[in-house]
Length: 239
Image 1 (cartoon, rainbow, N blue to C red):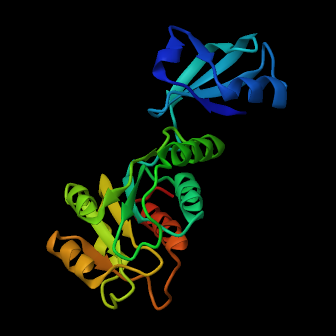
Image 2: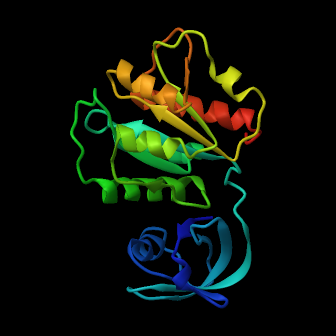
């Protein structure tokens, strides 16, 4: 059964109105019509099981049959602070980590980033939307504007548990940091292709952000978070 997101303003009583690109996808691509059933999500974790009652070129109206909290949403909120990678990799990072259950993605400009910050937030948010819709999420992860390294450290310092993936760390493991503890929020900081600068690591450690190793192999920046998020989910009993 197809799943689509709407704003809360589009939900009125027992009726939901779908607008935008989803109208054409539902009516023309999937060829759904009056009487067909789909799932609508409000983006805040509530799923609505609905029956289509009206289809026009401009919108689709549906009647709510039942509703429940989305079962696909993890209780642990994982926020990814991702240093800007080379061209094209950010799209992959957003897509895959949305599928894996990430709650928020903060692009970060660090010293060794090859690319300069650019205004791609709208595109990045659309990728998160499409990935969330495809995998049945109950929320659409927020992709923020790019922040500086110092701004990222300030934000991470407010999060319950924070880790920095650092290729030069050779003692502290992810397992040791989590160690069976349950957290409401966990921040994961991933560096660019060239890794973090030593001065950046020192700043992070002063802010009580734990540097961790992922073993003897050095992962690509686009692979790192996708490897770590499922591990965290497993340790938090989310999978």
